[in-house]
Image (tube, rainbow, N blue to C red; front, side):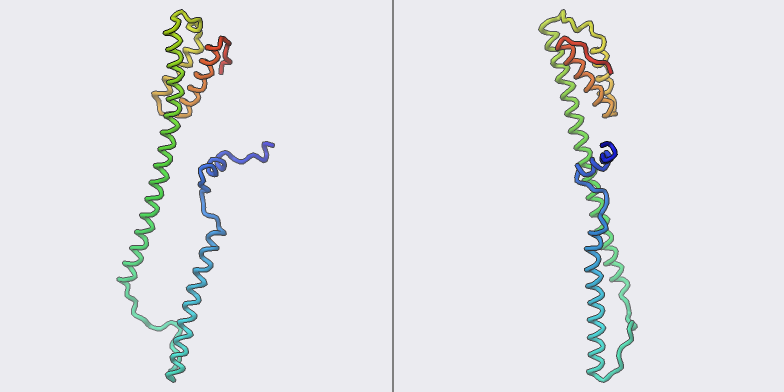
Length: 182
C-alpha cells in the first residue's frame, strides 16, 4: 500500500497541528458575513437618506455624496491596524521559532542522554572487568568514535544515526553476539 501512504512532510505537519495554510472554506465562512453586513449597512443608510429626503420634500441625495474625507484620521487608523497585524505576526512567528528550537533542544538532550548511558555502561563494564573480551571489537570503537565526532558537530541527523549505531553495537557486544555492520 505504498501508493496510499501520506507524504512525510504532510504527516509531520499534521502531528505538529500545523496545517500550513488556511482552508478556503474558513475564509469564505468569515468573509461572507462581513461583506453582507457592510452591504446591509450601506443599503440601510441609503434607504434612511431617501426616506429623510422624501419626508422633508427635498430631492433624493446622490448615490455618492460629496464628503470631505478626514484623511489624517483614516491614515492613523490604517497605520494602527497595520501595526497591530504586523506585531501579531511577529509574535506568532517568534513563538513558532521558539517552539521549534525547544523541540530541537529536547531531541538533542535525549540523544546525549542515550549516548551517555552507553558510555556509562561501557565504563562500568570496563571498571568491573578490565580484561573484557569486547575490547578487541573494532566495530564498537569505530561506533564510539563516530558518535563522539557527530556529538561535537551540528548535524543532528548524523548524531542520531551514530548514537543508534553505537547503541546497537554496544548491545550486541555486551550480549556476546556479533552486531550487523551498517
